[in-house]
Image 1 (cartoon, rainbow, N blue to C red):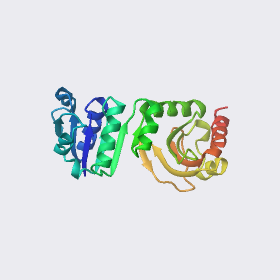
Image 2: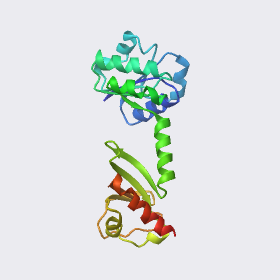
Image 3: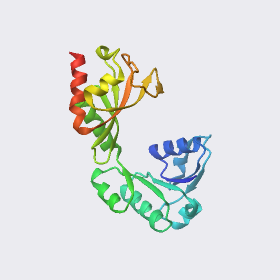
Image 4: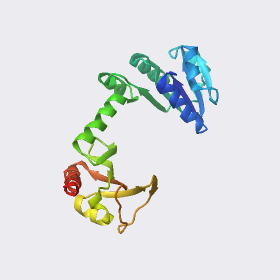
Length: 218
């Protein structure tokens, strides 16, 4: 798989290192040649110095053959322009962009670009932890109708079966994480204090999960 990353700042360099470390063919573009120092001496991809809005630069990065493109420069306008270009001119199938200002997300959506705003994501996670203590949301599906949660088993739930937890909060168990190791579940699996139980449930049943966890704390 051939990937292009536009922007070699903190986010872009970390992303480039991760995907290159997994064996992907990675080209990194940045207008500042000094930015490539963030990649370290062991980086296995290519670096291209230049403006990502320049078609010649994109083509030097083999955009015609790219399977994915990530725009992670420090500017939302630059990320949007670059993302639109690779989608419309080169038909890159998978395009994602970093958006700093959440109010700009609508423009990316109109362009058909998947935009990620870390501050909004962080605020959502903090809101979830504040309002639903004892559980951490891993992913929200659709418009939030279905949630995948990681439930930390409190002391008084230790010894309960997965089937008992399911009956009390109407959820679908997915996996159990114990001592950092994940495992699939059987209905008669017994949970222990400190286990992380991964469950899927409809948002309407979040209050029942909150009640179950609060009951065990009292």
